[in-house]
Length: 112
Length: 113
Image (cartoon, rainbow over all chains, first blue to last red; front, top):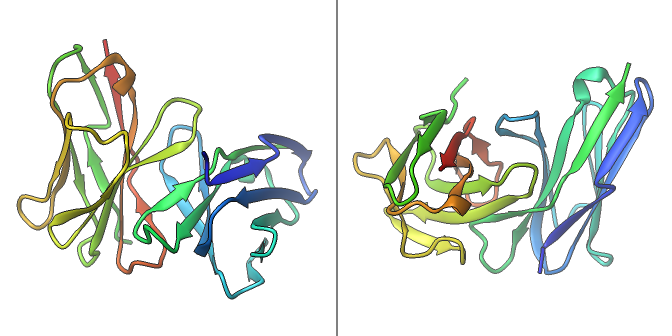
C-alpha cells in the first residue's frame, strides 16, 4: 500500500491565485517533505516539516502538518507561471528512517 | 552550489544487457540513494547506502540490481540483465544527515528495447 497520496492529482489555476495541494499518509513519520519536479528533471526540495511541528513557511510556501489526521498541505500563494510543475510529498518514516517514501504527486498548471 | 551529477543522461540498451548508471553525490554527504520513476508515475525507492553498505532496499531491488561506491566519490547502480520493465528514469540522491533534505541528480533515462 502506498504511504503518500496527493490530492488532487492535477490542478489548473490562473496566475495570481493560490494553489493548495494535500497529502495523506498511513504510518507514523518523523518528518514530511515537499519536492517539486519540472517535467523530465530531477526533484528539488522545497520544505521539511518535522512531526512535532504544525506549520512552516518559506517565501510563498506554507506547509501544515496534522499528525492526528496523518495529512499535510502545501499552499503556494500568488502563483506564477513558473510554478507549473509536479509537486510531491515525501515521508520520513520512524521505522526505515533512512529512506523517503514519495506520493503520486500533484501536477500543477498555472495559466498566464 | 554543490550538486549531484549523473551519467549518462540517456542510455538505450537491448534486453538482457548489463547497464551501469553512475552518480557523483555531494562530497560531504553520507547517505546515498537510488530512486526510479517510470514515465508519469510516482518516484519509487530502490536502495539506500550508508557507511559502505546497503542500509535498506525495496522489493524492486532484486538480485539483478547492485550498488557500489568504489572510490569514495562515485556511486553506481548496476542492472545485470535488463528487462523491458526496467525502462525508467533513475535518480541518484544524497544527503548529509539522516533527517534532512535529499539532493537529487537530474536523472538517467534508461530505455530497454
